[in-house]
Amino acid sequence: MLDFIGRDLSEFLRNLDDMHQALTDVMPAAEMPSFHVVEENSDRLLVSYSSKRSGLEPFVIGLLEGVLHRFGRQGSVRLISNESGKSIFEVETG
Ligand code: HEM
Image (cartoon, rainbow, N blue to C red; front, side, top):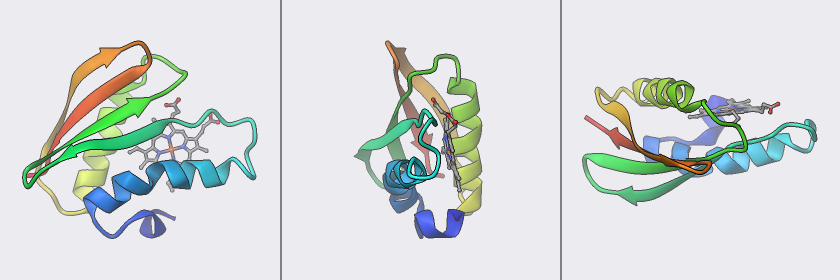
């Protein structure tokens, strides 16, 4: 499934919502997160994350690090803001 989400980092992150949304057809009770690439340049991406759950930000850092690793990037991920159900992560793409 991961192969279908995107062929590069930016495309992968931009398609995450559609992938999670498609799963709600078979998992109607799932509470899906929402991700958006809000800014992109040659060495970093800013990614917003919204959820009805709180406290999952460290988990999301690990997931985003895994996505970087998947695309062979040496970058890093850090949380730069977190308020009322919406967080922004800086993904340095290395
Ligand atoms: C094939 C890959 C993936 C599948 C099949 C998948 C599937 C799911 C499903 C079914 C849930 C809902 C759990 C529930 O409420 O019952 C979920 C939640 C979540 N997914 Fe994915 N996911 C995938 C990849 C990813 C990736 C790559 C990321 C982030 C980079 C991600 C981030 C999350 C997060 C943070 C949640 C927790 C829900 C929340 O934040 O409220 N997922 N995923």
